[in-house]
Length: 327
Ligand SMILES: NC(=O)c1ccc[n+]([C@@H]2O[C@H](COP(=O)([O-])OP(=O)(O)OC[C@H]3O[C@@H](n4cnc5c(N)ncnc54)[C@H](OP(=O)(O)O)[C@@H]3O)[C@@H](O)[C@H]2O)c1
Image 1 (spheres, helix red, strand yellow):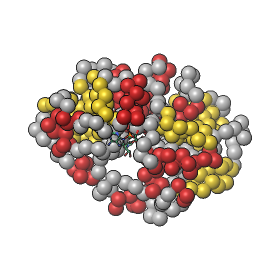
Image 2 (cartoon, helix red, strand yellow):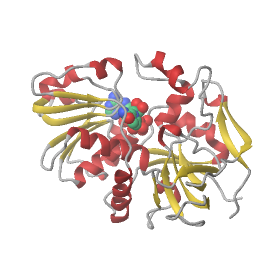
Image 3 (cartoon, rainbow, N blue to C red):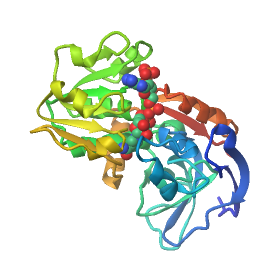
């Protein structure tokens, strides 16, 4: 593979709906000496991508959005937080990857994954692709998995504890259920009727169908409540949170971020931190079969707008994947 000068990429120069996305020929990333250039084979359209595209931020965070992301449109016009693919070229100082290596990378908030090529530092969030995973599955490892891993750490979730996951069929929720079960945590999952069997297959011990029952009325209490979809609040969960309990406001708004603790019960919120050690663990779990990213649907690169439309519904189950064919 040669180091390219041009590539196709989906760009977003104005905030709005999927119709604001354009497929363009743009310059390929110019490789720095400490970087790896990836020929992207699969990426995802995450809830993070559609939030940026539409400037749809949790309540109270809107005023900061344009400051951080860009005034009229995203400063980084190429969205896409996670990719899998083959190393196309490496910079002169790179020693741990070679052209042709299959890899997974989490570009995170820097984005740039909705393109034929993406560059990342050798010391960044990049690892070899799990050998037993397709490019599509490997591209879905990070967004939900890295968020769940960081919140599991922040909550100091322990073996034997009781966990409630609200939004268990989403990208973050489905990773949370699997990673917690893998640790020997007892998981109650909240989902809707259509997703009950999918969530059971992820390993949840108890499932609450929110169209039929409210988790706060089932006579149960939990050590940790992971609210992945802002469907509840710390205040609402206090009666069903055990002493020393932690409420994880993963999709919370500014008010959640400013909420103080109540006695021994804590509210935890804010952006997840991404660490290489978590990506290495996710790869290990994927290889051992303990973590299988849930895939909602797979689109071709030309169908990027349709992929955004699917994520915009708020009903996707796991990840919406976009594959990028070889030329
Ligand atoms: N703090 C951070 O750093 C961080 C990192 C990543 C993501 N996030 C945020 O976390 C949120 C979730 O992300 P995601 O990618 O997992 O979202 P997602 O995949 O788009 O979530 C969709 C799923 O949520 C379920 N859902 C929707 N409303 C629900 C409700 N009231 N109760 C239970 N389930 C419900 C839907 O299932 P049904 O159709 O069955 O309702 C659907 O399967 C987003 O707001 C995202 O911005 C935050």
